[in-house]
Image 1 (cartoon, rainbow, N blue to C red):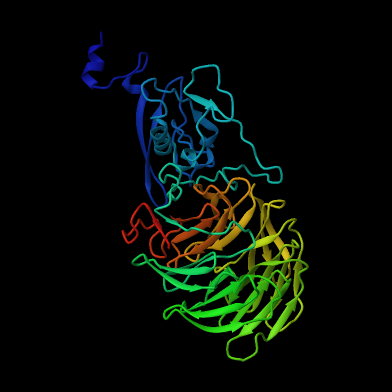
Image 2: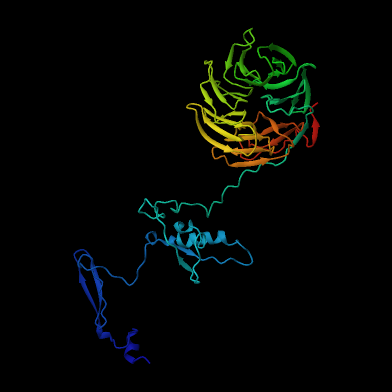
Length: 485
């Protein structure tokens, strides 16, 4: 029971201490006044004095640590999986750790990932730091675990979805199963040209109208088709070695040019020159403004020329042959400026990047199966990817930095790749034979593929320029299969 004296004073004092042992002293400093409580007790506590009047260190009964220097990231919370919802609390736990211990702590992996769990049930577990071998600093300060990760707040972006089935199939009777031919091309005016046997047919994508452009007769056949960049004229290479130029709108032949000794299977336009490659191993340059059949001949391949593409700036021409060579020519030289011989099979697939100058992609045949990337400024090979199948065609998207490849032996697949990582965006299947033919729509979103199974298949593989998602079928092309002739 409290004594009457202690009740009277109203102070709650410890046993053995009375009011006389406490005194309040007042003194003044130079600039301010301080009041100090003195305790006359055997257990004396150091009095608080002014920093200006005492050289002793300041003491306090509480210690508040600095969070930024306490290395809280070395502790991890033990997570117990809920039997009701497996993995359901993972995001919540990350956010909770971030709120409790700060953003530095929230960016680290939970305990138990990559290291064994502690056998006890303590809530906090110490995790050993691993500093870089060449740096005296811990990874929490300068390393990749610097706490700037946005994993807790921003989920990873899901990959773009590409439809796995074609939205349109056309029957194409007599579409040849010949690796060295180029029988499909899509014009900038949205008209598809297809060589079927001795004839060339035009299919207008906007209304699905089919027009027969020409018939070469029983003694000849179509080996290659190629539209001009404006899309109004089309060139045709024939089995007899001729190169014909037709007006696509009036279905009228404009010019016939000779010079090749045998079949002309590949054609390529730049702004004013038409190049043709033949089984006779030569490349002829045709100029419609002059009367002669050709203005120059490029000799360099030792076997049939089956790939031919002009760069987008018209400065360089890339050619591939059955001699496994990839040659690069400029506008003025009669000899190749680059001879690239790393491929071990025929080079038909050639594509220039529309996003980076002097970047060339090429694909090899069955014995090679690789897509290779070249810097044509110095001839260096930048990368090589083994696709596992014969590479028949390559085409670069103009909307995004991706490219599509079509394949033959043995998987007959279509593959979409990101560049430069060469991560696979999609793998499309459906053709029963080699996917030998490839063309892209003028808007850059749809590709058409052709094979010896006598079908043309239309796929939505690339996004539009404005939106990041693929454009759905507009309804202009009905589902199902129709005939191109």
